[in-house]
Length: 155
Image (cartoon, rainbow, N blue to C red; front, side, top):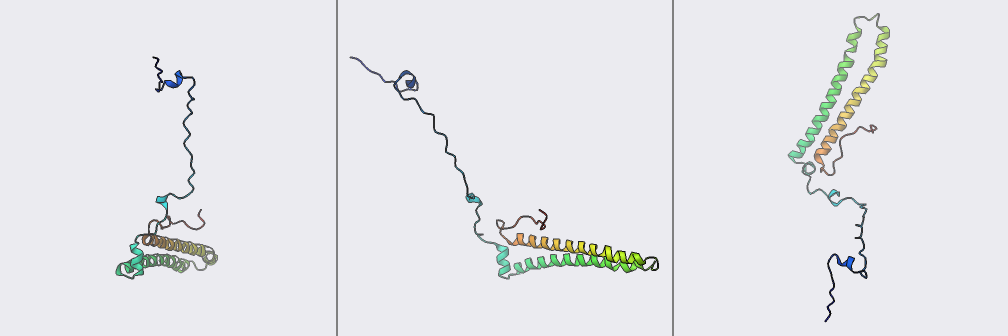
């Protein structure tokens, strides 16, 4: 009686010449993701309380709008105050030396006053836009809110 034993262990491939050689395991498949991850997709806001408070004209919504108006008024009055202070003091500066300050008056009024007024106006517009951006950030859903304020043309 003869018995034929078949070895099926890990050494069986080395002992049996007629066994097929093992192929290397297949490389993992590479995939390219072209869409936006599901977590980052925009979802409609469940509830934006500040926006609804304003649109429904509740007292809280009126408070939000009043706060924006106060900040805009504060910026406008600040710009007007600085402008009045700078331009209003010019006659006082020119009064003591009226005869010797002939060309100085024209230089101050023609070359100095306008750039100063332009700088004040630029500051006011920047401040007003920043107030509006802050208000928009308060009212909008955080997923929809724009990034920090960047002045147009500043890169």
